[in-house]
Amino acid sequence: MTTSVKVSVLTENNAGELTAAEHGLSYLIESDGTRILFDTGQSDLFLKNAAIMGVNLEGIDMIVLSHGHYDHGNGLEYLSGGTLLCHPGCFIRRYRGSDHSYIGLKISREELAGKFNLITSRVPYIITESIVFAGEIPRITPFESQITSFVLEDGTPDFVSDDSALIITLPQGLFIITGCGHAGVVNTIEHAMSVTGVERIYGIMGGFHLKEDHRQTDETIKYLKNAKPVHIRPSHCTSGAALARFRTAFDARPIKTGDILSF
Ligand SMILES: [Fe+2]
Image 1: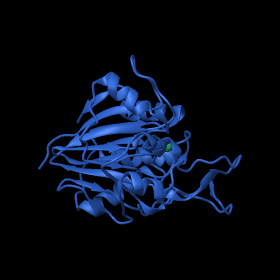
Image 2: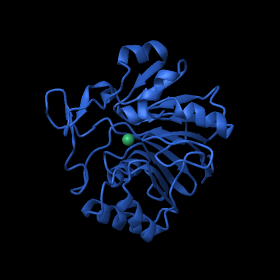
Image 3: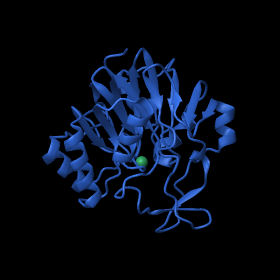
Image 4: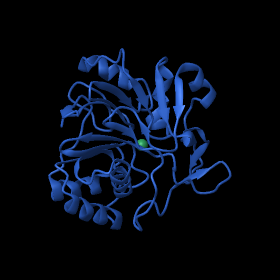
């Protein structure tokens, strides 16, 4: 079994000393001898930052798209070849409820299937013995995924059912990587435990989609205090107010582009 995870932060909302930022997320995740590009941000910034960081994206084993939002998948325009894995719901047309601006993927399913070996999975998909794509995450807690600011083409609410995560099983417990956390961090952890049968949480990292200091933030912190992961690294779409709470509760340091983190 693999014993560690290395995450190179290619795109993130906070800039590093040498690397720029954008609203988006892209991590290169290395574990178990496998290299996975998890999301691509909204532009070619992930490629520019990878070059600055000396991170070689040649020969990656797979691209995983966490969900079908522009800030996670529009960078796919700048890649081709290899395997792309995601939930089949990533390709729908979707909008902000406030101004009806488009926030889905710029690239169609057909275009992506032409560029990549496209694999879609609504159920958990085993990538290696220790790495699983979570598939669709059941929404079970009463405090997550209760409201949404997004709508579908017909105006009905979009709860981003395609939102998924990567689950890595280490001897220390599960290391879970979220894209935007639309499903909710606690729902994601509960799903990861049920998929793997492992109940110990070693780490959680990625977008937590906590927009303010409110009940969901309170409940998530309470849950994590109980679950006691060693590593808690909220990033990307976690608001300043929520990040401040995590900093107080767990001394969770901010993530920046250019970071190469080992867990
Ligand atoms: Fe996002």
